[in-house]
Length: 294
Image (cartoon, rainbow, N blue to C red):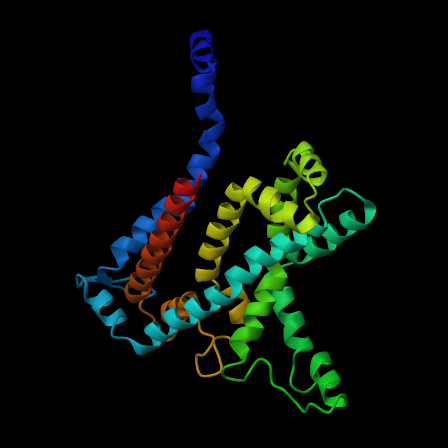
């Protein structure tokens, strides 16, 4: 027993003991399901899993000839292009204003972070009621202003912007808090030297703050990009992909295909693999770009 303790007591080995729980959970809930999804994508498998017929790459061929799947990729791309830049850069601007540790800024940080800790279901239902075409508060205000009734959650061409706004409102708080933490680590002497040289707040922000927190910027960009490509909960609760699939994301379609009355776990797995490859490729490109700038 003493020999075992002595063996694991070295820092180079004891680290694996502390990493073991995370590695086990990651393996059980990420790696293994991913491998299963890759395997299922090559079979025709119903949701009951009581039979499986090997069909090779037919699921992938069907996916790229499926207009609804291609439309979901388009919707996901539009959502990502709307959500990610506003989230990443908007949170950075907000963070610059609430960095100092005074009571007002601490209160604002708590307010911005509050939606993050709320469930997506509660947030989706809340915004669905606020924007309801008949009983919604925003609709009522617009009508009193003489702007007429606007159906925010059922208007093609508009609803995707509304869903993007809800998603940004829900999650930008975490990005802002991460930025605040990074900005607070920047040496104050840099700002003092810049101020002595006559640099204003805006120049300090672009020439000191932004370059100093570049690794944090890339981290938020990569995580928010991957998250946007996997958007599901807000869309499912507010619009369920409507109207006419104009807000149906790829994950929403995968869910519908996997758990509908005519479910096909193999086909849904194939679409999941395609989405995984897209996310992985985008992440690798951004990671390399980050290393080049570093």
